[in-house]
Image (cartoon, rainbow, N blue to C red; front, side):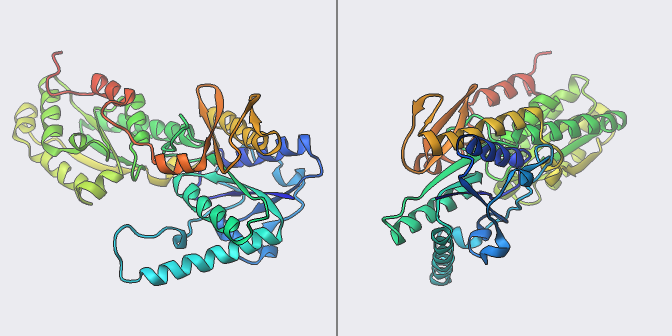
Length: 380
């Protein structure tokens, strides 16, 4: 039987390292075990196998990939696997397209004799993997098949794992950008509204704002954090306490909840605010900037490479020994995560149901941001 490996969803630095770790750990125990790489994420499962997969992979295929960003296997999203929320006019067509995709993917997995599929990706990837696993077992109930998920997402929002592969690299990229932009903002005594990735969860925005010394952070989970009136109160208080520039970090998901022009409207209100104008003797200029996909770029950090090595090897342990760290794990579809320094294993169902993992006002990091960032009632 064969182990299939693919990377799916948004690329994340360290994905290559996870592929390498899973490959090497599997081959250390079973040199003759066939390992199959699928290219371009789940798309590779439903295309011609000779062009979308690499069979009989050997060590040369993973040479020197540990230092490269992105994923050498390629990735992509499969719209057919994600149905829209709420009623839609073309629901039947969407369901038919999904079933067609699953039928081909399952047939290819059966033909290639894949009994374990390692999926390196995020929340959406795990949901797609769950559908594929259920379809496979429905079509071929006597053939063993299992999905092992490895969390890789710069959003760091996978339930059951403290960290996801790629988050630390993206965090360092964003903090580096904040530090560089601080020089020009401080020189010109301006405010900068800096958008970072984070469609549903604000972990990247929150932690980069803390580490980069931002004055304000706005995240989609906490409505008060992106309330213009509350932000302006904080900025006005800062001006009274001799703050002369501001860095405001906002997660992109805020624009989906509060309007695509949220940053533009906030910038206009800062420039027009009479309290700020009076204290400065004129308007404070505001600039908008977006880090966007730059956060995903570059070589993985040392921490991400270490995490990817741990999780990739843990996936191999689950497949070959049924245990991680000597502890037996569940037999069904699973996800390997990290808790402290130790790999942990959760059921795929549990991870899918609990994801995305969101920031709350009770989260220790959010509480920390309230202590460290600008406040309207700041007494000093």
